[in-house]
Image (cartoon, helix red, strand yellow):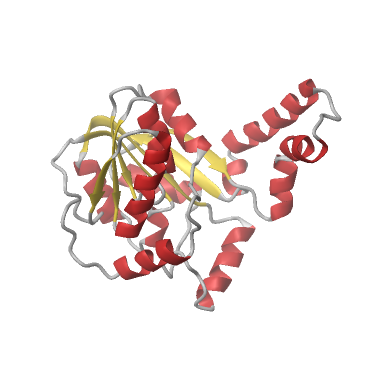
Length: 256
Protein backbone atom coordinates (compact mmCIF):
# COMPACT_ATOMS: atom_id res chain seq x y z
CA UNK A 1 0.00 0.00 0.00
CA UNK A 2 1.06 3.56 -0.64
CA UNK A 3 1.96 5.87 2.22
CA UNK A 4 -1.06 8.01 2.99
CA UNK A 5 -0.99 11.60 4.37
CA UNK A 6 -3.31 12.16 7.32
CA UNK A 7 -6.72 13.50 6.38
CA UNK A 8 -9.52 14.78 8.59
CA UNK A 9 -11.91 12.06 7.47
CA UNK A 10 -9.55 9.14 8.02
CA UNK A 11 -10.41 8.61 11.69
CA UNK A 12 -14.14 8.84 10.98
CA UNK A 13 -14.05 6.17 8.29
CA UNK A 14 -11.69 3.93 10.25
CA UNK A 15 -14.22 4.00 13.09
CA UNK A 16 -17.07 3.26 10.70
CA UNK A 17 -15.46 0.18 9.19
CA UNK A 18 -14.31 -1.08 12.56
CA UNK A 19 -17.65 -0.67 14.35
CA UNK A 20 -20.65 -0.36 12.06
CA UNK A 21 -20.40 -2.87 9.25
CA UNK A 22 -20.63 -6.51 10.23
CA UNK A 23 -17.85 -8.80 9.12
CA UNK A 24 -19.11 -10.75 6.16
CA UNK A 25 -21.21 -7.86 4.79
CA UNK A 26 -20.30 -7.12 1.16
CA UNK A 27 -21.73 -4.15 -0.70
CA UNK A 28 -22.55 -5.10 -4.29
CA UNK A 29 -24.59 -2.98 -6.72
CA UNK A 30 -25.92 -5.07 -9.65
CA UNK A 31 -27.15 -2.04 -11.63
CA UNK A 32 -23.65 -0.55 -11.50
CA UNK A 33 -21.79 -3.59 -12.83
CA UNK A 34 -24.53 -4.42 -15.34
CA UNK A 35 -24.41 -0.89 -16.79
CA UNK A 36 -20.62 -1.15 -17.11
CA UNK A 37 -20.91 -4.50 -18.88
CA UNK A 38 -23.30 -3.04 -21.49
CA UNK A 39 -20.76 -0.53 -22.77
CA UNK A 40 -17.27 -1.69 -21.85
CA UNK A 41 -15.18 -4.72 -22.71
CA UNK A 42 -14.36 -5.95 -19.21
CA UNK A 43 -11.63 -8.44 -20.03
CA UNK A 44 -8.27 -6.69 -19.66
CA UNK A 45 -9.87 -3.32 -18.83
CA UNK A 46 -7.82 -1.16 -16.42
CA UNK A 47 -10.28 -0.20 -13.69
CA UNK A 48 -10.06 2.05 -10.64
CA UNK A 49 -12.65 1.96 -7.85
CA UNK A 50 -12.45 4.94 -5.49
CA UNK A 51 -13.80 4.47 -1.97
CA UNK A 52 -13.77 0.71 -2.40
CA UNK A 53 -15.16 -0.22 1.03
CA UNK A 54 -15.90 -3.94 1.05
CA UNK A 55 -14.78 -4.27 -2.58
CA UNK A 56 -17.89 -6.11 -3.76
CA UNK A 57 -18.16 -4.37 -7.12
CA UNK A 58 -14.40 -4.60 -7.71
CA UNK A 59 -14.53 -8.34 -7.03
CA UNK A 60 -17.26 -8.84 -9.62
CA UNK A 61 -15.33 -6.97 -12.31
CA UNK A 62 -12.04 -8.66 -11.41
CA UNK A 63 -13.79 -12.02 -11.70
CA UNK A 64 -14.73 -11.07 -15.26
CA UNK A 65 -11.13 -10.35 -16.19
CA UNK A 66 -10.71 -6.65 -15.40
CA UNK A 67 -7.40 -5.37 -14.03
CA UNK A 68 -8.80 -3.66 -10.94
CA UNK A 69 -7.18 -1.21 -8.54
CA UNK A 70 -9.18 -0.46 -5.38
CA UNK A 71 -8.40 2.77 -3.52
CA UNK A 72 -9.72 3.81 -0.11
CA UNK A 73 -8.78 6.35 2.54
CA UNK A 74 -9.27 3.79 5.31
CA UNK A 75 -6.94 0.87 6.08
CA UNK A 76 -9.76 -1.09 7.83
CA UNK A 77 -11.87 -0.70 4.68
CA UNK A 78 -9.08 -2.13 2.55
CA UNK A 79 -8.78 -5.02 4.97
CA UNK A 80 -12.42 -5.74 4.24
CA UNK A 81 -11.65 -5.57 0.52
CA UNK A 82 -8.89 -8.14 1.06
CA UNK A 83 -11.39 -10.46 2.74
CA UNK A 84 -13.92 -10.05 -0.07
CA UNK A 85 -11.47 -10.61 -2.91
CA UNK A 86 -9.87 -13.57 -1.14
CA UNK A 87 -13.28 -15.16 -0.65
CA UNK A 88 -14.07 -14.58 -4.33
CA UNK A 89 -10.69 -15.93 -5.43
CA UNK A 90 -9.83 -12.82 -7.46
CA UNK A 91 -6.88 -10.45 -7.54
CA UNK A 92 -7.29 -6.71 -6.92
CA UNK A 93 -4.48 -4.18 -6.39
CA UNK A 94 -5.04 -2.26 -3.15
CA UNK A 95 -3.97 1.34 -2.60
CA UNK A 96 -4.53 3.48 0.49
CA UNK A 97 -4.61 7.00 -0.84
CA UNK A 98 -6.13 10.45 -1.06
CA UNK A 99 -8.82 10.98 -3.70
CA UNK A 100 -7.78 14.63 -4.01
CA UNK A 101 -4.29 13.56 -5.10
CA UNK A 102 -4.54 10.16 -6.74
CA UNK A 103 -1.19 8.34 -6.70
CA UNK A 104 -1.37 7.40 -10.39
CA UNK A 105 0.06 8.80 -13.61
CA UNK A 106 -2.05 10.53 -16.23
CA UNK A 107 -4.24 8.26 -18.38
CA UNK A 108 -3.73 5.19 -16.17
CA UNK A 109 -7.25 3.76 -16.37
CA UNK A 110 -9.95 2.97 -18.90
CA UNK A 111 -12.75 2.98 -16.32
CA UNK A 112 -13.18 4.75 -12.98
CA UNK A 113 -16.19 4.16 -10.79
CA UNK A 114 -17.38 4.91 -7.28
CA UNK A 115 -20.55 4.20 -5.32
CA UNK A 116 -21.28 5.81 -1.96
CA UNK A 117 -18.35 8.19 -2.32
CA UNK A 118 -19.00 11.55 -3.99
CA UNK A 119 -21.84 12.53 -1.65
CA UNK A 120 -19.37 12.90 1.23
CA UNK A 121 -17.70 15.99 -0.29
CA UNK A 122 -19.07 19.53 -0.30
CA UNK A 123 -17.20 20.44 -3.49
CA UNK A 124 -16.95 17.45 -5.86
CA UNK A 125 -15.34 19.33 -8.78
CA UNK A 126 -11.68 18.94 -7.68
CA UNK A 127 -12.27 15.21 -7.23
CA UNK A 128 -13.78 14.79 -10.70
CA UNK A 129 -10.98 16.80 -12.31
CA UNK A 130 -8.41 14.57 -10.61
CA UNK A 131 -10.28 11.48 -11.74
CA UNK A 132 -10.34 12.76 -15.31
CA UNK A 133 -6.58 13.27 -15.14
CA UNK A 134 -5.92 9.59 -14.50
CA UNK A 135 -8.58 8.47 -17.01
CA UNK A 136 -7.47 7.86 -20.55
CA UNK A 137 -9.06 9.69 -23.50
CA UNK A 138 -12.46 8.14 -24.34
CA UNK A 139 -12.36 6.33 -20.99
CA UNK A 140 -15.50 5.93 -18.87
CA UNK A 141 -16.56 7.08 -15.44
CA UNK A 142 -19.55 5.75 -13.48
CA UNK A 143 -20.86 7.63 -10.45
CA UNK A 144 -23.51 6.22 -8.14
CA UNK A 145 -24.91 8.59 -5.48
CA UNK A 146 -28.01 9.17 -3.31
CA UNK A 147 -30.93 10.74 -5.19
CA UNK A 148 -32.32 13.93 -3.65
CA UNK A 149 -36.08 13.59 -4.13
CA UNK A 150 -36.66 10.55 -1.97
CA UNK A 151 -38.02 9.98 1.56
CA UNK A 152 -34.58 8.69 2.50
CA UNK A 153 -33.20 12.23 2.19
CA UNK A 154 -35.55 13.41 4.96
CA UNK A 155 -34.54 10.48 7.17
CA UNK A 156 -30.85 11.12 6.53
CA UNK A 157 -30.95 14.86 7.18
CA UNK A 158 -32.76 14.32 10.46
CA UNK A 159 -30.01 11.97 11.64
CA UNK A 160 -27.29 14.37 10.48
CA UNK A 161 -28.86 17.25 12.44
CA UNK A 162 -28.97 15.02 15.52
CA UNK A 163 -25.31 14.05 15.08
CA UNK A 164 -26.23 10.39 14.59
CA UNK A 165 -25.22 9.85 10.96
CA UNK A 166 -22.58 7.07 10.96
CA UNK A 167 -21.40 7.43 7.35
CA UNK A 168 -18.62 9.98 7.67
CA UNK A 169 -20.68 12.35 9.81
CA UNK A 170 -22.04 14.37 6.87
CA UNK A 171 -23.54 13.57 3.49
CA UNK A 172 -25.29 15.31 0.62
CA UNK A 173 -27.37 14.07 -2.30
CA UNK A 174 -27.83 14.90 -5.98
CA UNK A 175 -30.64 15.25 -8.47
CA UNK A 176 -30.06 13.60 -11.82
CA UNK A 177 -29.99 17.02 -13.49
CA UNK A 178 -27.37 18.28 -11.04
CA UNK A 179 -25.11 15.23 -11.45
CA UNK A 180 -25.35 15.36 -15.25
CA UNK A 181 -24.51 19.09 -15.22
CA UNK A 182 -21.54 18.44 -12.93
CA UNK A 183 -20.11 15.78 -15.24
CA UNK A 184 -20.63 17.90 -18.34
CA UNK A 185 -18.87 20.85 -16.68
CA UNK A 186 -15.84 18.57 -16.15
CA UNK A 187 -15.71 17.67 -19.86
CA UNK A 188 -17.61 14.36 -19.85
CA UNK A 189 -20.52 13.44 -22.08
CA UNK A 190 -23.36 11.32 -20.74
CA UNK A 191 -23.73 7.73 -21.97
CA UNK A 192 -26.41 6.20 -19.74
CA UNK A 193 -28.24 6.57 -16.42
CA UNK A 194 -30.15 4.36 -14.00
CA UNK A 195 -32.03 4.57 -10.72
CA UNK A 196 -32.04 2.00 -7.93
CA UNK A 197 -32.94 1.48 -4.29
CA UNK A 198 -36.39 1.39 -2.73
CA UNK A 199 -37.27 3.45 0.34
CA UNK A 200 -39.39 3.33 2.47
CA UNK A 201 -39.31 -0.39 3.14
CA UNK A 202 -42.80 -0.95 1.72
CA UNK A 203 -41.49 -0.11 -1.74
CA UNK A 204 -38.67 -2.62 -1.28
CA UNK A 205 -41.24 -5.29 -0.38
CA UNK A 206 -43.29 -4.51 -3.49
CA UNK A 207 -40.17 -4.64 -5.68
CA UNK A 208 -39.16 -8.04 -4.29
CA UNK A 209 -42.52 -9.78 -4.00
CA UNK A 210 -41.46 -12.65 -6.23
CA UNK A 211 -38.37 -13.40 -4.11
CA UNK A 212 -40.35 -13.05 -0.89
CA UNK A 213 -43.02 -15.42 -2.21
CA UNK A 214 -40.42 -18.05 -3.11
CA UNK A 215 -38.59 -17.71 0.21
CA UNK A 216 -41.64 -17.79 2.47
CA UNK A 217 -43.92 -20.19 0.60
CA UNK A 218 -41.25 -22.30 -1.12
CA UNK A 219 -43.40 -22.23 -4.26
CA UNK A 220 -44.92 -19.86 -6.79
CA UNK A 221 -48.56 -18.79 -6.47
CA UNK A 222 -48.53 -16.96 -9.80
CA UNK A 223 -47.20 -18.21 -13.14
CA UNK A 224 -43.57 -17.29 -13.80
CA UNK A 225 -44.66 -15.40 -16.93
CA UNK A 226 -46.63 -12.96 -14.76
CA UNK A 227 -43.72 -12.53 -12.36
CA UNK A 228 -41.40 -11.83 -15.33
CA UNK A 229 -43.79 -9.13 -16.52
CA UNK A 230 -43.98 -7.69 -13.00
CA UNK A 231 -40.17 -7.57 -12.74
CA UNK A 232 -39.84 -6.01 -16.20
CA UNK A 233 -42.17 -3.19 -15.12
CA UNK A 234 -39.91 -2.37 -12.19
CA UNK A 235 -36.82 -2.54 -14.41
CA UNK A 236 -38.47 -0.10 -16.80
CA UNK A 237 -39.03 2.28 -13.90
CA UNK A 238 -35.37 1.97 -12.88
CA UNK A 239 -34.26 3.07 -16.36
CA UNK A 240 -36.85 5.84 -16.73
CA UNK A 241 -36.69 9.55 -15.99
CA UNK A 242 -39.47 9.06 -13.44
CA UNK A 243 -37.37 6.48 -11.59
CA UNK A 244 -34.45 8.91 -11.37
CA UNK A 245 -36.68 11.24 -9.36
CA UNK A 246 -38.35 8.60 -7.18
CA UNK A 247 -35.82 5.95 -6.23
CA UNK A 248 -33.15 6.15 -3.57
CA UNK A 249 -29.98 6.33 -5.70
CA UNK A 250 -28.96 7.28 -9.22
CA UNK A 251 -26.07 6.21 -11.39
CA UNK A 252 -24.58 8.03 -14.37
CA UNK A 253 -22.13 6.55 -16.87
CA UNK A 254 -20.14 9.16 -18.82
CA UNK A 255 -17.21 9.21 -21.22
CA UNK A 256 -14.21 11.51 -21.32
